[in-house]
Structure formats: structure tokens, C-alpha cells
Image (tube, rainbow, N blue to C red; front, side, top):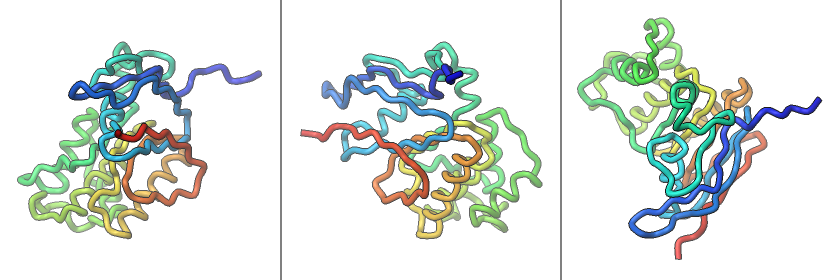
Length: 213
């Protein structure tokens, strides 16, 4: 018997207009379990706007986003419990320590974890020993690594990542790539944008937004 369940994520006939200019229209695609999808396109083509619509942070001008067959606007609780979004700007509070920043981020997902669960994630992203360092004392790359530690702890089925390689060095890029592969192997799905080359040893689909005239 064939599987008739809906895709994890469905984008249906999506249209987005910004400053009276159409960024994209008629955009339709889907994302299944354990799939990786890259959103491609030049600057100004609407990649970030698309991800914000996918996350419910912006309403489309037309069309809809469905999660497991239901519109996300009527299914917010389940969707936000199973999806995590990382924007291209690191939302790290300078006056809080690395550990405190992780706890604040986890709180957005109603998660409370002991230090013994958080510390392995910090070690994984190269921040072992930085638990008590203030966010304002971190480099841009280290701030990004704090977000990677949060991502590792978030327990989300769907990762939505806007320019996840920003500020990362060569080792950081390799780490991000490995985390995506591990997430996929565990049945998770990823939709992302990047201006940098992503070397992923897996089948990966892409959706390209139109060029700006």
C-alpha cells in the first residue's frame, strides 16, 4: 500500500510583494521527511522573505503554507513545537553569558535543560569552557556557534536556516554541514539559504527564485 500522507511542508501558489514590487508569485513546492532543500536566488529575490513566510513571521500576499496537511495559521502550536528558525543575524544578548543565552533561546521553545545536557552541545560546537563568557566578548563566529548549540538542543523536526554559514570559519562551515547531515539521518528536514557553497554529501533539492530585473 502506498503512503498517502501529505508532505511535511507544502508551499502552495505563494506570492510575495514588497515595496510595490513582486518578489515571487505562483511559488509551489514541498518538503518531505529527511529532505534537504536549498532556496537559491540573487540578492533581493525574496529568499529571506520566503523563509519568514514559511515560519509564519510574515503573511503571504497570496497562497499558503501547510504543515502535515494543515495551514500553519490554524496549526501554530504543533508547527512551532516542531520547527526552529535561525535568521541571518545572531540574536545573542551581550550582557548574558553563553550558558544564559542558551537558556533564553531554549525558553522560546518552552524547554528547560540541566547544564549536563547543554554542555555536550557547547563542546560539539567548540565552545567548551565558554559557559560563563559574556555574549559581548564573543567574536561573530562564536556568536554563530552559540546558535548552532541551540539548534543541536532544539529537538525540532524542521530546521529553517537563513544564511547559516554567516561569520563561520572553515571549521565552522564543516560543522554546520555535518549537523545538517546528522539531522537528516535522524529523520529531520532542512530548508535553507546561503550565499556560500554548501558541500553536503546527500541528495539535495533546490528552488530558485527569479532574477531581479
